[in-house]
View 1 (cartoon, rainbow, N blue to C red):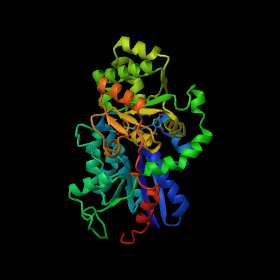
View 2: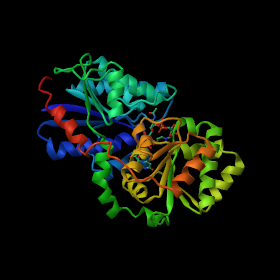
View 3: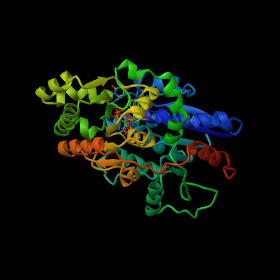
Length: 383
Ligand code: UD1
Ligand code: UDP
């Protein structure tokens, strides 16, 4: 039996963890024993517990209750907590997802204790080191022993940074194994799409008609914390909705809702709040979210996960960031990078409304990434 400790903390990691836990419980129960540690980076019920309940993730064995704070403090408290658990549990592997501060903390704690790290979503790069996530993911990749990349681009990024496809077991952090296995989020979208269709009444709840609304999410710190960028994005949302008489469903991350009034010009705040076409709502559950994605006409977002889910469901996506790690979406013509440029967002959205893309090649795997990862971990006889 291989013992793993999985660290989750932020919303997308909790969602990703559902795919691995599901694969373990359906095919690897007698081979992999998973202990789950929640750092508490996200803690509101609608940012955390809702996913654990809804997606069938086992209740975390530990919750560090770290909460919000500066990057340094938040990460430091997590490192201390994870270190203690690793010393007690002595797992064969620590499993980390993505690029959040919870990921970085796990990587620092585990590498110093010489516990091999499994990094899921390895190799992604924005080539923009002003993003905290870019630093977190580079540091985690370079401390890892098994690296699972969701895309060919991610895999090639690893090769370019000196990782070798020729390494053979026994793998170590000095002789890491790299794998291109597809995207664990795609596994989830495939698995939950039908369930969401049946169970979620989010469209009815918010008075939205299928194919007659646009879905938007904005939460990246460089957008929310910079008043000019936030103004530009919300002014664009206002224009797109009014010019096309099109509803916009806008589930707001608490970071964004907390800063909207403060960082938007008063006139724009009043205009957006009073715009009958813009429906701001609290963060929604994953089943509600994928139902919203599946029936939207298009998506405007600065989220990594939401960009990909839009693609899985065949929806065009305007990316409110200066770049994306998911370059395949842009290459397929299904995404346009508009940054926080008001005119570029309006232009891209209008273009997609009039002329939606037709081709969404399968570049995110076969929906069995979690199974591949479990097989690789379970087969680590070299451990
Ligand atoms: C974090 C990740 C980001 C990821 C996002 C997913 C880092 C550096 N960033 O960003 O990569 O895309 O999660 O959603 O790890 N807050 C609440 N309630 C909560 C959680 C947060 O009110 O349950 C508010 C707090 O004011 C907090 C702010 O949101 O200060 C930001 O939270 P934090 O976890 O620091 O970063 P995110 O912006 O969520
Ligand atoms: N998500 C959700 N409810 C919401 C917004 C997002 O369930 O109100 C899901 C979304 O479907 C995706 C994940 O959260 O699976 C993306 O997380 P987020 O946008 O917070 O972070 P990122 O992917 O940018 O790191």
